[in-house]
Image (cartoon, rainbow, N blue to C red; front, top):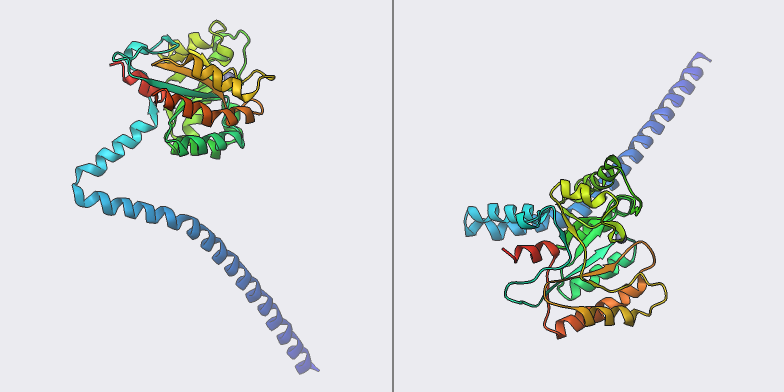
Length: 288
Ligand SMILES: [Zn+2]
């Protein structure tokens, strides 16, 4: 009897051990598959890095440092002294060079921003995106892609309010957005565009107090017109384009499928007119 009992106890013990190891096995399996997932996503990045290093290091020791500096500069959009605390509509290139800056407001936005990025990439065009903080909060990954593809970034406030604001509210609208842009993408920007182009509600005044450039536009696609066909957006831009112009369009704040349709024709038409595309920071740098 006593023996039988101990046999049963022993059996129960080994069953319990069995369960324990079964559990351990499944935990190990899960851990392994997590590691497998992680390493799959990391591998291409590591590969790219080592390839870059292979190319860079044999050249000389200085080159990687220069590349690093260029990379950092790329993420910081500073305003040349003569444009700090100024409102800017367009620039007159000193040599009348046919350069033009496309600007895209109110994103990052699902679908339309990505479609516009594809069009820009295919046509080797760099644009300037003015982001709404609350939209970036919703779509951080889209924002990261915009930056990774070399476009310039400006601040377009957190809420996209038009109303009059006291200084504390204006400061919060702009700085909260700057903070999120930096946290999400590493970008620091001193370019600001007031929502609706309103210059007297407190926002532009605060931006100027921070030596930002207040960037308006000289050409509008008028793509917020709810009734116009997309061909009208194309016509508006091609008709009003001038050397040093800043062109307004939108990727967010509503359904911008017509802007997406217009964009390839806008780019092709401007190229046919002989224009080269630059970002707003690049446009200002050309005026030195
Ligand atoms: Zn806007």
